[in-house]
Length: 189
Image (cartoon, rainbow, N blue to C red; front, side):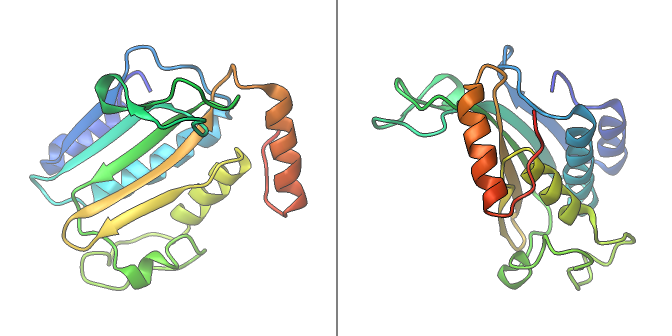
């Protein structure tokens, strides 16, 4: 995520939406399928731009995220959480936040289902209603989950964590096998 794609900058500029990238200069490399992750960004950033009105903002953030802390986490550089002692699976957290229409609590429960469309005037856009279902599938294939928080009239944030390249390969394999056993789809790195 060195810079936002030119097409998004142009689309945001044309619509009057501020597009921001917040990340550390030297993020750790992550494990993942380049093409599939580009599809995730395409869907999440595209939706953010689609549902954010002129004058709004879309922010992409990426920062290191400990798998879990053995002691209380503290705030590190740039307000990102840090942990002096964490498990062997550090990650990079990716967030896409918009100041758009938001999604009702009722719709949030189903938003990742195939063909589910939020029915209101703001969301009456052309599309297949597959985008967020595809996002969820791709993120799950990477051994992660996509999560969201949203409020009507305030906006929406989607986030997911990707394992760092230097993460413990044996532990990643154990977690992938555990997910397979539980029925999740996992991309083998």
